[in-house]
Every structure is written in structure tokens, then in C-alpha cells.
Length: 265
Image 1: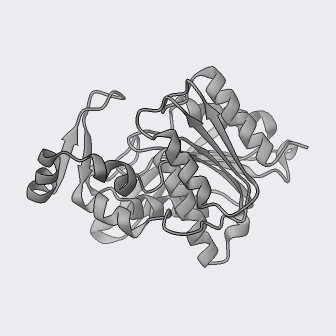
Image 2: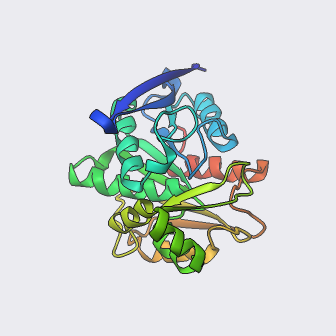
Image 3: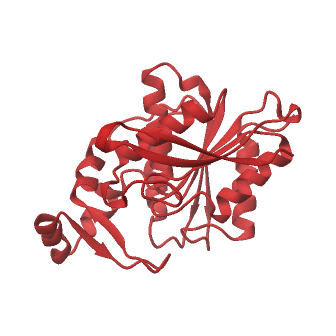
């Protein structure tokens, strides 16, 4: 089993330049011909989380390559969280994909990472690189969450804060620091909508969704399926699953889904 290597890449120029931290695991002879894994985390998560770690270990056991990285303003990467937008994090994801992976890859996106994964497929298709996506495993995916899930629930105080200050904060059960949501994030989210037409992935998709998820309702997963025209779409509901889906049994389902996309030979 190969060891993970820490790497850095620069994205953007001038005042928009930021350093992105990544962890890579190279493929071995045992994994020759097997797609690698690319982990795309959620908002405020990082590449050292339990699901990302488990995916990397799983890749190593099969000799597959594995790439995980932190978006700007997250984890070990530079940049400001307040400057974060879907476009910005998409740019970083494509840069990491291009520079730190090769050949077919399975995109494994969690929460906001599911939105990023779908946008990556669209951007790769524009430059005729969609063949590099062997499949997608989407965990509690939150495409268009700013428009579909957050805007309808904004309080009057939050709307006023966005207008007055350009951002608002709210406590989160996932850590001591509050979440920060900016006006730019909401405006940019509209530019990156994927639930406004068909999403041609050109590859198998497996969605895993907890039905006890307080952040992304399970019906949102059903809505996503309606926009995926391919017949090769699997939707797995976990009745007592929460948003994190990080229990041992949840992670086992995620890893089994990656194997189902491109089985080990």
C-alpha cells in the first residue's frame, strides 16, 4: 500500500491567488486500470474527516489512486472563507483534478461537494474531458443549496444582515465557530445552478441520502434524480441516517457504492 503525500498547488493570480493543500495516494500495479477516487468535501469540512480518511484507506487497499484537498478557507488551505463561492471552489477543484490526478476518476462528493462534483462534470464536458469521470458517488448531496434550501428559510434579520453587511452568521452543531454566509455566495450560487435542466453526467451515479438529515431533506435527493436523465442512477435512502453519514455502517455503504461504480477486477 502506498503512503499519502502532502502537496500544494497555487490557484488564481494576483490578489485572487491562494494555496490549496492536498493529500494524494498514488496507484500501484494492483490498481492498474482501476479509476481513482477524488474526494470533494462539504462546506466547512476538511480532507482529514472520517469519510475522506476511510476513502483513502480503501483506495490503498485496492491499489487505487486517491486525491483529497481542502478548498480555500478550509482546513490546511490558504484563503478566506468569507471570499468563498461555488465558482471559486469549483475553480480549485478543477485545478486539483487536472494537476494532481490522471486517467479516469470517481468523484465522491459530500453535501456541497455533491454540487461541486456535478458542476465539474459540466465544465469537463465543455472541454471534452468528461471521459475522465468514471462515475459519481454523492453523499447527502446539496446542489443549489443556497437557492433551494437556504433562501426560502432566511429570517428577516438574516435578509437585512445580507443587505446591510454583506453576510450573516449562524451557529452550527458541527463546530465551535459560526457558519458565515455572504451575499456573494448566494449571488454566485444562482450562476452555478444545476437543478434548472438535465444534468448529463455520462457516467453512473449513486446517491446516498439519510432520511433523518436535518440539513438536506431527503426529498432534495429525489429532486436531483429527476434532473439526471441516465438510467444508471442509484438512490439509497438510510432511514436513520443524518447529514454526516459518518457511522461505520454509513461509511461501509459509501465504500460499497464506490466499488459498485467500477468493481475491482
